[in-house]
Length: 268
Length: 299
Image (cartoon, rainbow over all chains, first blue to last red):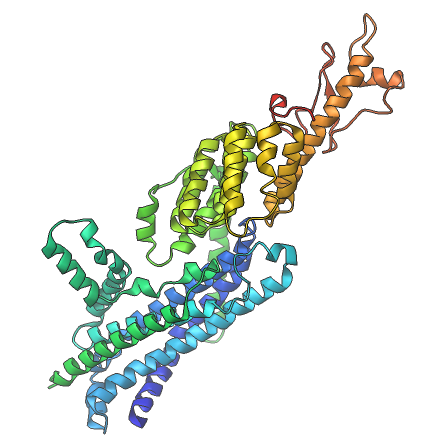
């Protein structure tokens, strides 16, 4: 465990040294803050738009971090040949994979936390500034704890995308890994359509094939409850728990597969 | 880099930037690019296609189309010296609500402004109803949508029976306010009178949306103006001009019938036709366009 945490901390430090998360966080904070100005154009819908913008920014910036750092986690070590020095130390390959993954998840957690705090600050300011009559027109309270459900699922989705990027990173080049991860992310957004394929085609084989793909490809659209929380529609705790559990199992499967591939790689 | 070089580099960069800025301003002055150059375009009209392209960011795309709908409506309504064109209002609101089916304000905004008579709006109550019915599909228990359809039937289509039916449906929804039920007999008994109109707009004046309250307040001022026109018309009929004279406020003031030129609730003087004596709201009054007089029977 100590070895994993050391690798994780080194990944986190490296990402901090790269300054990529800093820039993204700064950009996200600026975006969320400037959303207040955007809200002035929207005929009373500023709080909704600030929530939409805040949640979307959290998701999209996290996605960039997950993909563009995730794809280099293993392949960069191989390209720089630093993998030899690392594996010569008392670090097993599974520990290496687990540590790399945990480090990037830590980076993402810090990013998501900063973005969440920034968004709540803007929302708190807006709520404080508005009159009670105006607040009565909102679908949900300004500083709504239910937003945390959407943020939690965004974070689990980012963890899953990181696991996908790491998985591809164990056997592919960074460019190909980025393309494959991004492709899987996009397919994952449409995955729910495959479940209802029987409504579009008659062939039973095609339907079963689509159903199989539905179960194999990560169901990323399930993690998106942004619209519901922004409109104050109920999102049950059991739905959040089940979706989180689904994400955790899927991540587990990807990490095991990544470890398996990485363990069999010959670096001679 | 030698000493003093960084400052020189910064200075050159600043000069280049300032020059670019100057050229940009010069170009904009010589070749003005109006808002209309791009505002009239809508590249994608299929809500389903945009939904797919937006991935998980449909609410944000909906917000973008909502802002565009507001700007389009506001821009056209305030347009001077050219015919107003509201062609994009419905497609923009349709796209907004396809991307975010719970965006209730987009449905309600559409109900009010799509039905508005030209030049205040496109004068398309049918599209307003279509948009609200789409809202009912997304949220079948939202009483506001049923109420708004009833309102469009009442105010713009003058179909009081259908309006009463929709108000009844609104009253049947869970959480509907208790002022909805009395609207049903009011519609069926005397739908077209100004008292019913006052009742409806008065309820909207208590609404939760600022723009809805502003619209309701304006409509109530229009109804007040119609009442004032009725009273003034009676006065004008009672004191006709002598042969050779023409109808005018000055004449009535000289005869001490009026103390001054009467003004409408927006503060603009009423106009009087010199030959017929017909009183009306001035064309430049903020209350224009007025509802058609035949639509609102006297109390």
